[in-house]
Length: 77
Image 1 (cartoon, one colour):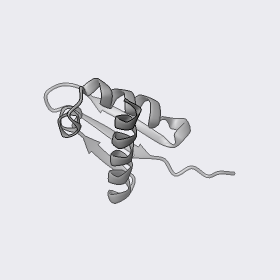
Image 2 (cartoon, rainbow, N blue to C red):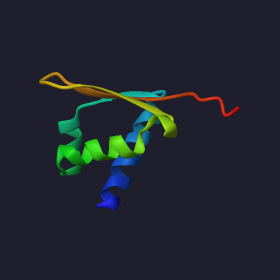
Image 3 (cartoon, one colour):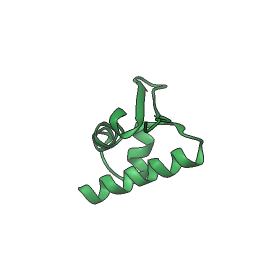
């Protein structure tokens, strides 16, 4: 399952790079794209896109829900 997680992580990181550090995703659409359960998307977001790794996740549930992933610009000093 880690290969799928790696693939999803890389896909999201590529999108973030294309869209200047901020994207909005539909959990179900992403799960359909990768032919996996939405919980797999949740797992990747919860474990690989954390504040200590330089990301913030915002989500809204429901019919028009979304997941927003924002890459932080952190000063190393």
